[in-house]
Image (tube, rainbow, N blue to C red; front, top):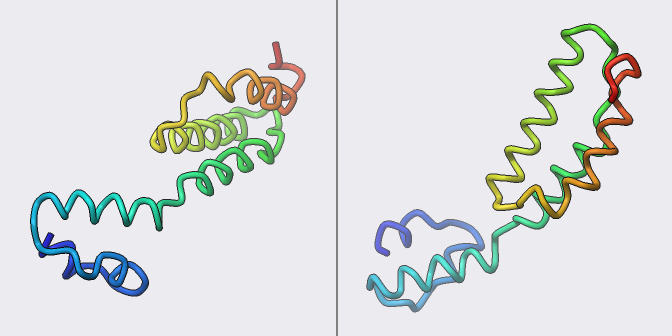
Length: 106
C-alpha cells in the first residue's frame, strides 16, 4: 500500500487519500482505481474497430501475412482484456472473410 501510494500521480493519487496503509486497504485501493480508471470497454471497442476496418490484402504472401498478423494482434489484445471469442466470433468471421482476396476465401 505504501509503494502504491508513492507511485500514484495526477488524478489517481487523490482517489485513495485517507485509506490507512494496510493490506485490506490495498485491495480496496486497487478496486477503487480499477473502477475509476480502467478503460477495458474503450480498449475493446478500439480492437473491434481495428478489426472491422482492416484493409483487404492483395494476394501476395507478404500482404496476407500482414493481414493475419494484424488480426492476430487485435484478437490477442481482446483475449488479454478477458473478452471471449464466442460473443463476437460469429460476427467477426464473415467480416474478415469478405476482406480476403477471392482466390483465398472459402
